[in-house]
Image 1 (cartoon, rainbow, N blue to C red):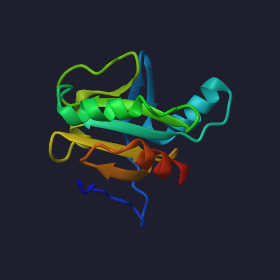
Image 2: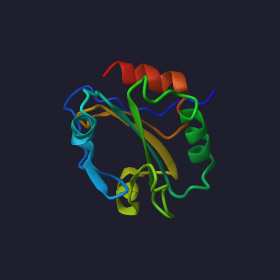
Image 3: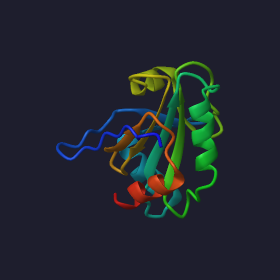
Image 4: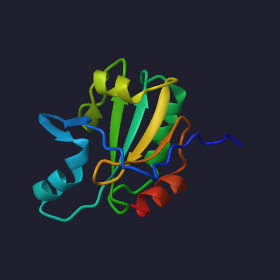
Length: 141
């Protein structure tokens, strides 16, 4: 069994100034949940799942998206974001540009990040996260 490399923050919250885009709209990670709540006129407490890879051919990137397709994002209040350091993300969904992706990809060619509705890092892993782990961590914040 592969051990997950996790960083859990228990001390000071770490908030990233990452810009997330969807079409012509731009959001800051720390205000995404509140901005979407305002846009859709309903209270949301979203957990942001950012899947980061050097490019879209990385097997872990492909596998993580396959896992996310099995999770009901709406019922678990999750929002999925693609971040590719090289190549073009799917601009129909939420994405981070190449520079932002590179800043999140500190080592290796893949990572997945979960952020609270206020933009605090909940979890970071260099391994594919199972659906159960994503749901459990998201429900705690």
